[in-house]
Amino acid sequence: MEQLQLPLLWLMLAAYVGALAVYGLGIWSRNEKMQHLATKVVYVGLAFTTAALLLRSVLIGGLPLNNGFEFGLSFVFVAALAYVIIEKRFSIGAIGLFVMPILVVLCCWLVSVDLTIEPVMPALRSYWLAVHVSSAVISYGAFAVSFAVSVAYLLKDKSGDNAQSRLAQSLPSLKVLDEIAYKLIFIGLPFLTIMLVTGAVWAEYAWGAFWSWDPKETWALITWLVYAIYLHTRFLKGFKGRRAAWLSVLGFVAVIFTFFGVSYLLPGMHSYLV
Image 1 (spheres, helix red, strand yellow):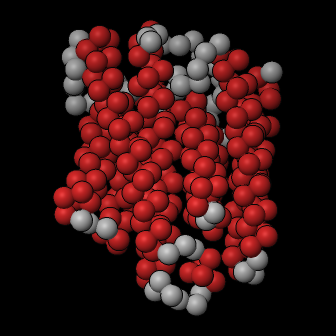
Image 2 (cartoon, rainbow, N blue to C red; image 1 turned 180 degrees about the horizontal axis):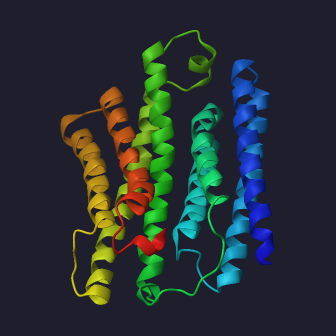
């Protein structure tokens, strides 16, 4: 069964690349039926992602949250699921043109890493694992889609809300894009908060200190601060539109650096999650 992992990952990648291509063709040709077809291809990719997650769970005998590969696979699942929920709720298939590249890049990374199943490290043998890591996965998935929506907002805003370009016409209004990005961040930040709190409690239990300024801890806090500023300025200062979109983009840059950059460039106590 272990040999089935890589084929499933390649099928995931092929599905998301195919969806990206069909979204692009649908927008270029102004063909809504092609955009609906692309969304169906995303469902196929999500099905392969679910199968890969279930297979990994069976192989390790637990939740697939023990290392970077399993986190990344779960990340793809949550981001794809968040997208299809948003697409179904708001009928904004054109956003797939911005979400799919994120899934494609993550899948390219997944097919390149070592899939060997190693024994779980003692530090990870805790009931805190499920809450801590799953909270991070949910928040990252929500932030990934909010990033895609924010990029779409900035591009549409640059060309003008009433522009005649194919892309601008295929996207919903700036107000709708701004609202969707906000709602996703509003959902994601509480889960990121849970991740930080449970991580601190777990660290005290495992390492004897609630906070040690480990690089991943520090960058997780930076990420939290960016999104907290986003919500704070929106609630108290009424920041919307372009400024909010740029904060959303900055927040996701922090997310990606926390996941990839810190793991490979700033090794620390969380290095075993690579």
